[in-house]
Length: 107
Length: 153
Image (tube, rainbow over all chains, first blue to last red; front, side):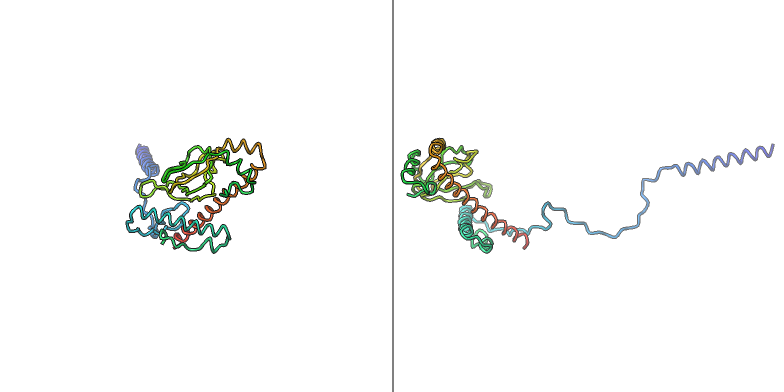
């Protein structure tokens, strides 16, 4: 009888240990992620630009000129550019195509 | 007055073509046509000046910006002979100007009757259109060059 009770106790104890081990193995992982080794800090890249890999330098603000003066500057610019284009069409050279303008609108 | 569009025609042929048109006086500051208008007539400049302009936004306002200026002998409004027959610029007279307006239908009928004249006139028209294209192409490239230089600065 003693042997029977001893065997029964051992069985119950074994089942209990097995159940604890199983529940530990089957438990979902904790919500807090395990600590990761810290990576070296990487400087974030500049935001991607469409068809541009460099920032366009800002055009310095122009002093506030009256609109009439601005329109006159635009017209003078177009006349000068047209003259340059006429010269190019009459005798096409790279130099004429790329010559600097004296237009006050651009300088 | 020698008109670029009528180069190579005999004096009699020039008279016949001009007889198809109507002489018009455009007062100072008046509009000859507007961008997008139906183009049913082309104009030969006889006297004065015609400004061809396009609208541009300047400080939030629409302003007419000069594209080209036409002087006596030059042709204005070749869109009248090229589909979709809509003006692609606006035209106005900065000073009192006289033009001869040639209706498309009358010109086309005449060209069908006398194809040799039609050939010469359309050849001259091709020169006018081609010259405008070459000018704007060179102007466009110069502006692009400046943009590239600004970007590389």
